[in-house]
Length: 272
Image 1 (cartoon, rainbow, N blue to C red):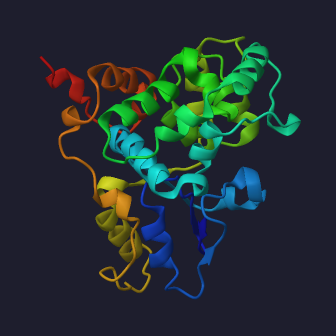
Image 2: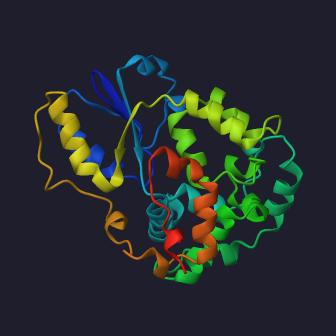
């Protein structure tokens, strides 16, 4: 997290947080906590009283591609790579609901050699789409090896789930793990519990940041020499060239919450 006198920023992975942290590190009176840490983890609930509670968000297509490319590059430094390619069976990782038994069986039997190969070549369209199938196909979700595996709602996307982890208190997003209500009602309830009230979009990050700095009367620091995560600059402009049609449609269906809330355009409508 990035914490100032009257604001905080929750740094959702693969959304420009490295750039923001390096920028704000130029200020003596702004605190940087552990990268990607949330209020659920540091328990600094008093921060929720600040006026400006900022989240990060990114075009879903670019986000999925970026998190895969970054995982290919960094392997075990990526939590998602480790979750997918390892057997996650420690008791503290388990949630006990309707999915637990199948989750345990899947973790015992999953093919780690095959899964590691999905992260060998960051330019492989096949590997990327096979990776996406694991995240987007409900029947393969147990492979992921994280809390997401225990979500019993088929049409909740991995990005939407990750967004909630960063922007909602655990006590409020825990309803995702139960089936008493349908997903539409759950999403409506969670949307009311989101504690961030403004957002920087990765696609417009520098402009959003400059406007924020000026509005808060902070000294405008150097932008041009700030280190950025290189994977954010290496995306293919035409997503049709890298995403299978099936996966495009699944992202648009399962991350409908993100598309709608942040006004992202669905590109599958351009497909013939």
